Amino acid sequence: MKKLLALLFIVSLAACSKEDDSTPSVSNTLSLDLSFVSGTNPLLFDSMMFTNAAGYTYSVSRLQFYISNIQLIKSDSSLVNISEYNYVDARGSSTLRISRNIPLTGTFIGMKMQLGLDSMHNLSNFLPATNDNINMAWPDPMGGGYHFLKMEGTYMDGMNTPGYAMHLGRNANLTNCIVYHPFILSAGSNQMDLQMDLNEWFANPHIYDFNIDGNSSMGNMAAMMKLCQNGVDIFTIQ
Image (cartoon, rainbow, N blue to C red):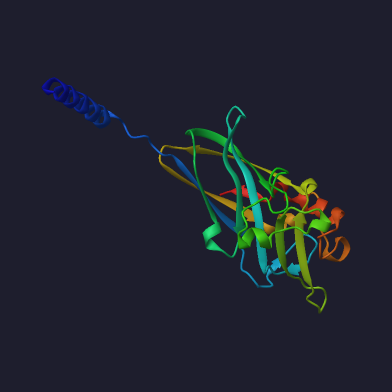
């Protein structure tokens, strides 16, 4: 019995020594803070103060979207996945920071991301049944899945102020965004600002005209394709 107790004591000391000598793992994080502008003007909701490429003065009352498949681009052009999908409401501060663990540090030349959901996620009732996801549902008779983007407001048309609703959905309109901007990620906590320019939805390569292309894009594939192609360069890293 004494020999057994002595052996257990030695094993216990060895275990404690091993635990004490271990080096705790370092958790590297990246926080992306989302912000919004129209040209050089910060987004101010419900204010008729922005002007797009077609010459319309417009306001914004709603801006909601999914940003997904965020990838860091290394200097050799290989990719590092950091985030699957995120719901963003520009009015809701709790959704404007995306924080994720990153598996490595070093120098990067930019980011890739998608505005919307890929075909694996863009299925009716696939996402958790939160109020946000339910409100972003795309009607089944129109293809199902989810809205990729809801941008709504009003615009000046002579003396009138009709509403507009730029809604984007359907797998064919998944918007692939690339932001080339060199940055360095170090051990510990890292923070970057990811900015969306709302004016880019209405320009480059297509001038989107509410009175020609439609002030409501839902169900209008030609209008949604223009928005999708315009959205490629909506993001910049600040």
